[in-house]
Each structure stands twice: as C-alpha cells, then as structure tokens.
Length: 383
Ligand SMILES: *Cc1c(COP(=O)(O)O)cnc(C)c1O
Figure (cartoon, rainbow, N blue to C red):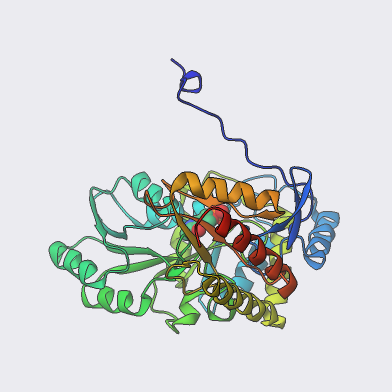
C-alpha cells in the first residue's frame, strides 16, 4: 500500500496566514494576537528590511542562478558572510539555506563514520538527522544538560585517535533553558573533543543579540557555532561561524553547499539589513526580554506553571495532550494564536502551550493574551 493511502494517516493542514508577520496577524481569515512565532525581534515583516530586499531585486533579480560553488556566489552572499563574522566576533562565517541544513553541513562534513559523537538527549531533530546522515557508528547520548553524564561518556570513549564531537542546542526551544556551555567547553578541552552548539533560539536573543558565545564570553573557544536566520533574524537561511580554516573546509567539502543553490538575492540583502539594524541598537533585544519577564511574572501570579525557562520562551504547562489541544482551540476563539506543543515534540504527559513573546508586542497586547489564558485556564481547570 502507498503510505499516503494508509487509513491511519491523516494529513496535516496548517493554518493559513494572510497578513505580514507581527504582534497581530490574520490567520484563517481572523485577526489574532500572535503568541507563537519565532519572530523574536519583530523583524519579519519590517518595512526597512523589505525595502533592502526590493532594492537588491531591482539591481540583481531574485534567483542566484546556480550553486554558489559554480556561478551563484553573489557579492551579497560574500558581504553577508563578512558581516556575520564581524557581528559575531568570529573569524569567518558560512551562510547556507537554513538552520536545519547548517546542522547537516556541520556534522556530516566534519565527521566520518568512525568518529565519535556525544549529543544531548533533547537536541533538535536537525542535529539527530545530521548524525544519521554522517552514518556515525559511535553515538552517545547524554542526559539533558547533565555534565556528570557528559563526562562519563567522554571517559567511556577515552583516548582515541578519532574526532570526538560534543553537540548541543544552545537554547532548548521547548523549555527555554540554556545549555551550560562554559562547562561543556571545559570538558571538551579536558578530553580533547570539539564542540558544536546550535544556537537557533539564542541568535538575536542572547548576548545582546549576538548569541550564546557572546552571552558566556566564549569567543574562539567553541569550534562550530550554528545559527538560523529564520527566527530572530526574521528572514531565512542558516549560518555557521568559527575559525577561518574550519569554515574554508566546510565551504570546500559540504555537499549541501556544493550540490544545492544558496539563499536568494533578496534573502541575502534582507539579512545584511538585519545586521545593520542589530548593530545600530539593542533596543529590540531589551524589549523582547522585558516582555518575556512580564509574561512569566503575570502567568505565575495567575497560578500557571511556566517551567524552567531562562529565556523569553514561556511554556505554559498543561500536561494532558488532549487538554492542550482544547486549550489552544479555545484561545483561538478568544482571538489568541498559540499552538499546543505535545508528543513527540515533548515527552508524553508534558504537553504545553508555548508562548513566544516578541519585541513587537506592546504591554497592552500581552495583557490581552494573559487575560485570555486566565479565562480559559479557569474554565479548563488548569488554574
Ligand atoms: C528552528 C531550528 C532549526 C532549524 O532552523 P531553520 O532555519 O528553520 O531551518 C535548527 N535547530 C534548532 C535548535 C531550531 O530551533
């Protein structure tokens, strides 16, 4: 039987957005408060960024025409990478088509089947897929953020003349907690391993917008820093920064770079403008944190459990899967768009509504959202 004809299969039907991204968006024809995008800084839909993209389209067109290794390496791609490296205080940067691809690039290109990888149990799917794609035989999983367990795995591997890679998310997106990167780096040094951090949810958020390495002041000590341009940066694409030799190696060898076309001209131009905006002021980053803090305080006051988040990500714990779906539906009826996060994204019985504040929300917006949560929380017996 074709898998799509399997009676147990039911097709997904994501809601349809018909407005620019922002604090309020039009979803399935209804104007709702947006509590579930990764547009942390409100830059997706920003006019200044659209203008930069339009200007670039007028000058160069849209499509890059070929893979970058052949004739598709626009001067905007090069400028963007130089700007990224400078912005992140790193030697060099490589921009690829997405954060997902960036993890495949970093893991598949640097590792051979005989090498060793040690991965946090809650790492993102794209890290898991990168490890699978690399065909690594020696795969170790350590307990979430558990440094004793990580060290035990390093000891178990012992001294080998192969590469040992420790890989972790920077910010864990389901709970909003941060990887203990200084301790990971210390252990990596002690046991001669290399470190890869996927900072998709820290990019534009931590370290004054410059990410987790800036947050912990670990410049030059993390081997491979992976990020995305599709969340706080508001456009799309993935970025890898690190030592020049490492980036040159990826640019020369990565199959995703050699055999797949890069981001489009307007993407590159838009991202250069994002970096301009971020370098001018950290006002948006500050506003994002302020909004995250306010949300957590108000939810807690109302009696909700907001978990262990250390970042603006604000999970509202529900527990039961069905109840989380019901909660989200009721919110939508109240004009608040917040999606349920449930198994397999999080463990069974740990379902939640994950609220994602952004710098675009005003205090009034947040109050509207909080009031809806309180109303439905009482109705469904969550508080
Ligand atoms: C979102 C995310 C990605 C994927 O990024 P895209 O740019 O959307 O491909 C990778 N890793 C983590 C941890 C993420 O949260």
